[in-house]
Every structure is written in structure tokens, then in C-alpha cells.
Image 1 (cartoon, rainbow, N blue to C red):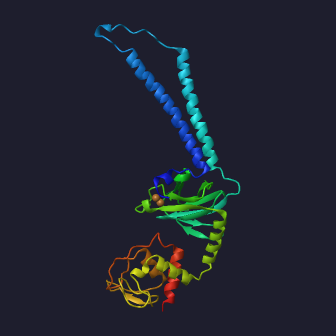
Image 2: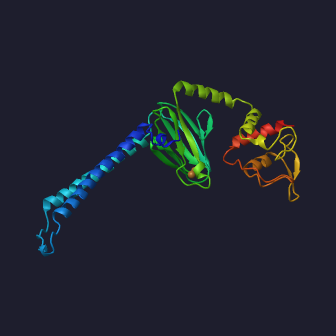
Image 3: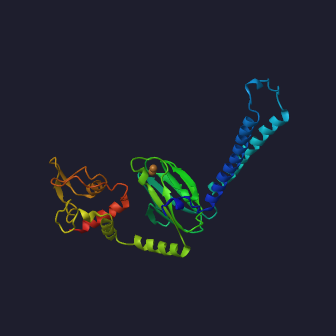
Length: 312
Ligand code: CUA
């Protein structure tokens, strides 16, 4: 669903309404553009000076009250119509739908966290059932971000220290792109999410599954994350060093850094090593690990630490 066709696809009532406003403005503007430019060209040709000696004085017309009144009133009506129509649609797409379910959105460099009222969470993935209106309650942990759903034609800034809202009416099943629409730093272009509109039955299954997943022991979740994020490409769990130190027996181990300092691999150290891997490199290992800041949430870090603790 990332091709341009899907990008332009109207997948919600808001999209149709906003497209209609733009179409109305475009068609009316085009009509007057052709009228004015057409008359301009017509007059230029019709009343051109044919020969040099034709330089008579032109007729002395000072004003035409009726004509001037008409060309002030008609454009005024037209621009007022643009405003009123646009305002009515704006009010409609920003008015809460009755029975909308709340979903919290916390943006940070460079991802979106979604939190459902029942405790489910999602990163860069917002799942909703088709046909049920949604109210997004949004805030930011750091800088200004944006929440833009092109297929819905809706966009709202997300601000630190303040809540902003966006109302979605998921009318059509499918997966739609969500973009951050405010430049928020080096990873801005990677800050994307998916809005997944599911049939009610499938959604119910997913909710049940997500609830079951939440019941998985923390260490097991950590093991799955370590596999998912590719940690095992560089770290073993059997005690042998690879590109990086083995995770086996890591927790609580003392290590010597390049500059001679000693560190203990406690929770803080593991968190720091995930978010800022170059900060404390153990002597003898290369400084090649990428940061997982923004990829691994604080909740996930907790799970990874719990898993590492089990590798004795
Ligand atoms: Cu977040 Cu751009």
C-alpha cells in the first residue's frame, strides 16, 4: 500500500469531503481563469491597432456602475462560498463523532507509540475496527511531530506539553500510510506508521491475541525481542564472544573499558548500551553497534534486561 495510487486513495468520509472542497475551488477558479484570459486574448486581437496610421484617440469611457457592481459582487460571493464550504467541512472533520473510542498517541524521535485504553500498545502500528470512529489524543515526548494520514486527507501537529486531537472515521478496510508531517530531526523521513483498518471479527481476534501476548512472562518477551531485533547477529548466548560480548552471564559482570575505567553491567548499563552503544565500549571490542534508541521502547528494554538476567 505504499504506491502513489494508494497514497491518493480516498478511504474515509473526510477524504471525500475535503476532495470535494478542493474540486469545487479548482473548478470555479478554472472557469474564471478561462473567462478572464479568454476575454483578454479576444480583446487584444479584436481591438488591435491594424495600421500605424490608425492611432486615433480611444473612446473616453470613465466608468460603468452596473458592470463594476457586478464584478465586485460576483467574486465576493464566490470567495465567501469557498470560505463557508471549507469551514463547514473543517467543522465536520474536527467534530468528535459520538461513541468514538479513545486511543492515545505519544510521538517521539522517531516513532509513534499507540496506547489503547485496555493497556494494549503498539509501535508505528495503529489497528482499528472498520466503521467505528476513533479519537486520537496526541502528545509528544520531545519536539513537534505531525500525524498525517494522506488517504483520509487529515493532518494534525503533535506538540510537547500539550494535547491535540484527531478524529478518524475508518470507513474502508486496508492498511494506510501515516507520516510524521513536521521536520523533527535526522530520522524524520523514517518516522512512519500504518493505520490498519480491520474487519470487526479479525479485530476482535487481534485484541484477544494482544491481550494473551501481554500475559507472556517478561523474560520470554525479551528473548523474542532479542531475536527480532537481530541482536544475535553479533552477540551469542553461549558465552563465546562474537562481534560483541556474549550475553551469557553478562548481567552483573564487571568489564574494563578502553580508558581503563571499570563498569558493572547493571540495568542502567544495558539500557545505555542499547540507546548509546558507543558510550562505554568494553576493551577489545569494536565500536560498531547501532543505536536502538527509538526502535526499542523503554518497556521492551525492561523485557530484554529480564531475558539477559536469565542467561547465567
Ligand atoms: Cu517526527 Cu518528523
